[in-house]
Image (cartoon, rainbow, N blue to C red):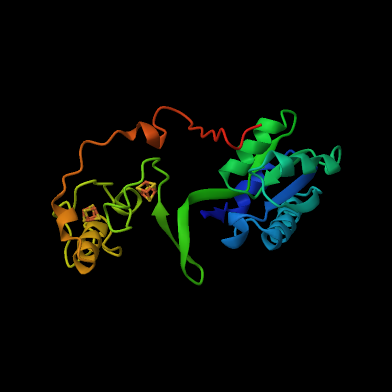
Length: 222
Ligand code: SF4
Ligand code: SF4
């Protein structure tokens, strides 16, 4: 899922400092699961924004709502029900949701309520770790299912770099050297021969370095 965390309240209060009525809009997708932008967080943020405005000596009206998803045209259209009742939207979805609102609602002012961090999973209660960078050319079949793009500090395709000590990355001592983990795992699963493979120079164009990426499924388009 996409991992995000709420922006500092002061930053959001500043964004809406010239606004009288704000629609605080959550999303029931990833940001809800990682407790950054679901129904509960919408309620808390709306309350904090009213408090922040009141400390500045002004009144802020808030509408609180949470869409099924903000990355889908179908649900974005649901915002119409609050037409004329808000001056700006604070989206608590990931950056995709904010962009979708901006794309589809040219007259709406939209602000981000969260910082979108990475694609990750829940490692423990309240702890999420990055697992994939959406590089567009997955190599996990060669690396024992562990991602060198997202999980190696240097995104090396042939590792380790030689700097790891005791299985720890030389850049971040608190995280494992993923290339050590890849080698250990390939060894454990009887795939040692994969370690002698030299990955060729990588074409990063699929990673979006040439601009925003697009995927079209002809079998799904109408
Ligand atoms: S190789 Fe690319 S697509 Fe596969 S997990 Fe890593 S970043 Fe994601
Ligand atoms: S120590 Fe391992 S994880 Fe860290 S940069 Fe080197 S190869 Fe990558």
